[in-house]
Amino acid sequence: MRKPLGLLLLIFVPIIVGVYFIREMSVSVENEDCFSQGKGASLVSANNIFNEALQPCCLDPMTGYFRNGYCETNATDYGRHIVCAIVDDDFLQYSKSLGNDLISPRPGRNFPGLKAGDKWCLCISRWIEAVEAGVGPKIDPHATHENCTKVVPIQTLLDYSLD
Image 1 (tube, helix red, strand yellow):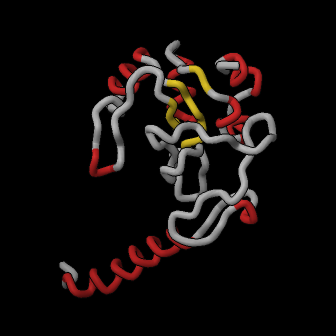
Image 2 (cartoon, one colour; image 1 turned 135 degrees about the vertical axis):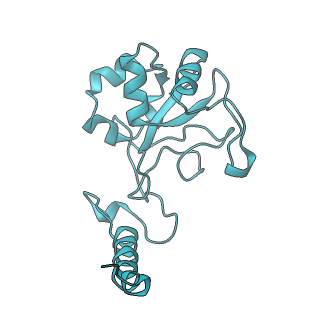
Image 3 (tube, one colour; image 1 turned 120 degrees about the vertical axis):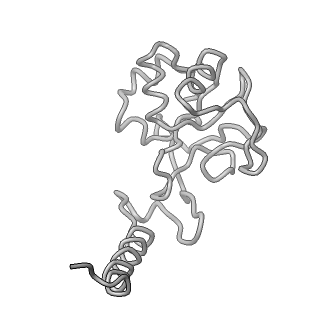
């Protein structure tokens, strides 16, 4: 027996809306005091892998999940854009081959397109993939977020450091 569409909508719409609001309102972070409140909020204070104040990664092109020049993150940054990488042609072609074209500009998304030598806040998972594929770009450890050390040994990060 078919249920009327109206009845299905009455059942499923509140569930879908409820899940959406729970997801948007919940913040699963280890230390909520590290985050400021509000739409598009970034970390109030963040450290680099040396446990020093996080330095800017790049202001031209403007990078970071919040496009403020820093590899900051919060609960809305599902990719965790916390590695300040100095991209090279090998990495850019590798990323493009996986469907993430970082070369082509996308002005509507505030993305200028990258070229070899640019610094950019990469997702930690993409950086790890690139390292495992043999095309991991160098990093600026002073501008790389301390949370990287939770998933990558500090020595590995230092092995890819410009310093």
